[in-house]
Image 1 (cartoon, rainbow, N blue to C red):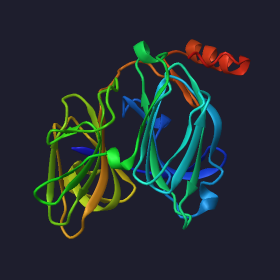
Image 2: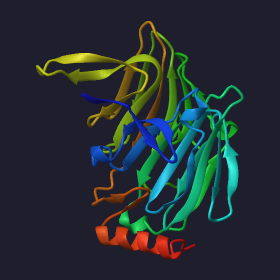
Image 3: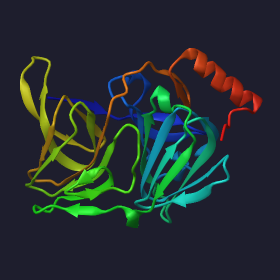
Image 4: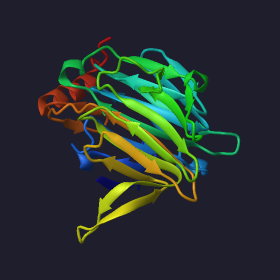
Length: 285
């Protein structure tokens, strides 16, 4: 069985119009993941104000750009641009202050996603780090039926993605299944697994309607599918191809104290984090 969620419009940062795929109200359904945003737009007014300087602690932010540019900088002196097909996996750990400013491409098109992953208490205060991956570093596996899989994190057909050594043991795949085809993929036992559809349509298993009857789920763009205790993910297409992000991770199962860009385990830890931010003692490394 699967559960289906539809992304909803929201405004974040300095006035960025985006689609919230899931967030605070879904805790702890997606553990170890906290939030996912879809910031695809062809209107620069919807994204150009960006996300000016702000802190993070206790989490990881994963940004995947499909089209356009996102400029970034941080309190450690890092700066750069992630563009078409690039990934930035930022582990905030003990604390980082950064900004992310979407610029779009020459036609004003901006496309991408940001996922937040929680860190367990044992790693909340680890040193911050980046894994910045360019598109040409991401291997693509092509299956016999023409399915194409970009392996950002995890292993497919013996091919390992470039993002490694992440505590929640995640898998992050960009999967394109041609029409009239089937995609089967085995995931790790007990991991939280979901797919977010970004183009086309496909069947993602069975759902139950209000009368408790089962029906096939033919789902399309901006729809999230949460798989329920599934070891084998099965996606089929008929007259239309489908592209989706397939993401999984090991649940943490700890209490969550969350306020804005900081996620800790207790309210006291949250209070300390914001007091340190206000007093200039936030950065530890």
